[in-house]
Length: 151
Image (tube, rainbow, N blue to C red):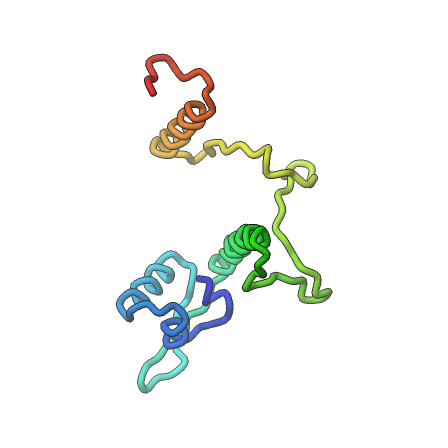
């Protein structure tokens, strides 16, 4: 998705950029297409060739990419290194960064007060993950463990 979001659309360019085998790239492109993240468009008939472009759903993945770049850049700065990508406002040229915002008030929220909760569509496996993770965090913090819990 990174390369597709950077504007690479041709199979040969994606292969060169990633260095993966044809089988791996073909499989990944098929998976992305089945997930609705990319669309395959013909650009040549003989021989038949396609390019691959992010769909609206796929373009939303750019937020995930931006978050990963932002975290990586934070740690690169700790080592006095520059980042390989920058996200900037197209009109002003000012750097952009993702931030957490309280959905009810639009106030900026810090990363230290985040709690993850199971959502309304959480299935039994997700509920187990949440409970198990809470149990592990409680254990690591030295807080009192649930009855019957033995470290």
